[in-house]
Amino acid sequence: MLETFCDRLRHLCPENFTSSGRQWSSLAQIQAQQALVTASELGLLIKADVTWDRFKHDNSDLHYGTEHVVESTESGDWVAKITILPAFGLAPRLIAHPNVNLRDDPTVPSYRQAIEFLPATPIEYLQRWIAAKEVFEDAVRLTSVVQWADGLVSFGISQPQYHGEAASPRDIDRYFEASGWTRVRDPGESGHVLYFNYAFQVLAIDALPRNCYLHDDELLPFDVILSRPDESLEKFLQLYPD
Image (cartoon, rainbow, N blue to C red):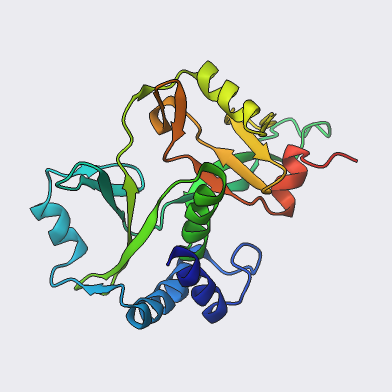
């Protein structure tokens, strides 16, 4: 269903969502509205009778992370996640910041670049989880598209409940390299830990202990942000050096 939904949404929103020049809020809103159409066709649409703010007020006992509201199912085998408004998760972006050059030094670059997490579009969010299924064999499922009473939109997904201890950076590094990933240096100031999988053309970022568990000597990445870098990010990271 995840792949079918994403394919349908891409068909309805064919404009390139990373280089079209549109502002994120405008593009995300367009995709969100088309997601409602797609969800209705595929039987995934839930029309909530409360606003997002009311939902948060009435469910303050749930776990609110950076990207999702998280709740364990009664069986304890799965977790349900709802994207936190106004975004659809996060995606890495290459951002240029102007440098302050008070002395008008010609050797000082006019700007510096850094990888930052910014709100993802609905299509980027879906593609992230499709990549997780491909490279990590994550059994993630798209379970719903929620239209809140105020018209805002969230995605609902479910994942297996992973158990174990937070993996150490050394365990994470060993796992990724053994699984065909290449450690990539972040040349910016952010200092992100990055891995690139040339076979799948996927960049892994935020592969940190809070997102990777170790269970029975097996690493379980469950909330690592995956993306397919655009041309500017490829050049910045020198993924394909001349």
